[in-house]
Length: 426
Image (cartoon, rainbow, N blue to C red):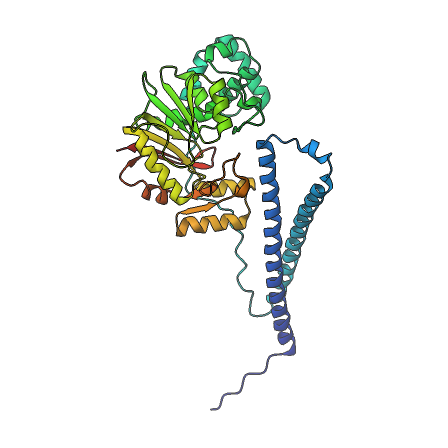
């Protein structure tokens, strides 16, 4: 029995297939346009945020600059960034409309292809490990009279509301220093001295007065995991101290410890030496060795220093830190890691394209580095091994060699951004 041939497709079905194919091609084109436009817009936004960061860091009054000659070019750049953002939004909306049209037409044919994957939001299932201790803040707070404590706590509530109790007291201490409230300065031994605009510091303003209790808490709590505690006669080093933002708080809290700080920016250490007499400051070289004898310190800490080293420099400075820390001593360091990618995405400080590049580099190589300071340098320090770096925990631990053991690791511990490592000297 012979089989009858299948009837040819109707003209209506063929037309629907052609229309679906046309829409597929248009969707692909719009997707490419959208990706390109978004990438350009994000790059412009990231560049603008970078410029704002450095303007604040250098103490530049942008309002004053905009009144000078050449301000028109700046405004033109701002309008260009805005126009790119508007373009990205329009392309995204057009893509969504075309995609709905495509789905409606394709339902009458063989069915639509899979929807494109959504852009990554760089989320991680591994939770961050925030700081839940305040040993330095507690110690300073206990020195206050009940009246002074109540007064500065009320100031903090008016300024920042009611956050975590530890954060509230940290803010209160800074406001007490700023306003010279009661006997806060005398009781805590904190100082009102603040670096001028031309001197490098990691924070300015009333909420950073007297230094950073948060980072002081992070250092003391973290180093305790490595067996290092402030004690009479102990010698601790702030490696990369800038103008002493962290070590000045520690020196006020633990007067029985011999405190040291070093940094390659001369203006920063010169100002710190003249204004924070409780700490011994030294200018450090850009490359090892440091101006200290072997096994000079019981503990050292480096806040956001390994977040700037190239791979060779990161390893060389781990070796140098091992030289100056005694066996049994400890080193606390912080570094950009996978959680920093998520943090940068949440705050819009880097483009999705660059964050994807960093994430791939951490997966494939464990380390990403870029010399982002270029020929201008970082406050006069021009060093091709000093830029911006991200490191995976595997890479850093594999770089420890025989000098260090790991005592503690806290992902995203530092302001929900950098990872914290506590190492013990073997």
